[in-house]
Length: 290
Image (tube, rainbow, N blue to C red):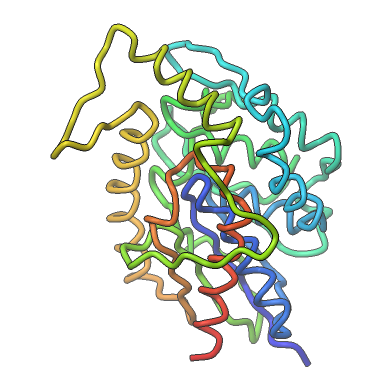
């Protein structure tokens, strides 16, 4: 009989792509994932897995450098956020049909935060894409989601590794994955291709956008390091969420902890998908061997 696993996946922007490698490594070793709870990118990857479409999602991610990914970014430039985020969800729905969470073959929960009530919101029913969109609403980047009387933002603001909301079953193993760990970076040797950021269409577009954003407002420097808009948001959120996450882990320790370096990439480096999957796979394999 396979060992049942309840999996908790942290947020972390593009670093959350490493969750795909972790899941693949667990399955390869014979673990049966029966429950997933995630925040932000963890909610997205976990939700796609629960829908049975992880292979299709990974294949799509691997093409991000070949398609005009920048067209997926629907800028709003409002006081609530720079990006609407609806276009990405719409694109995913084109090859991954939406389902209600209660109809999924395994237990699933996504964490968001209600700004109005100042509390966590746990999605365990209703549209899985609605849950994902709410959970990935990074403040000042993605516009919040308004559902009924709630105004929802990224769950990582209060609970980036939601082990306390994991939906457990008898005899399961609780495994948590943190993609923001302050540990040395692991760089894999990719077999299929080399990722060259400077030649990436994605990066060229991002740089052009940042130049426009800071045309009249120079970027601040800290110890000779330029902090662009997205980089500043990333570093600020990392600092805040990691302190809260560690306190939560001390209170609700998982059976197994898989840590992935926060230095693997920046929050919006989605063009590094292939590399990040390998980083996640390697981290999981090392922990499993131990």
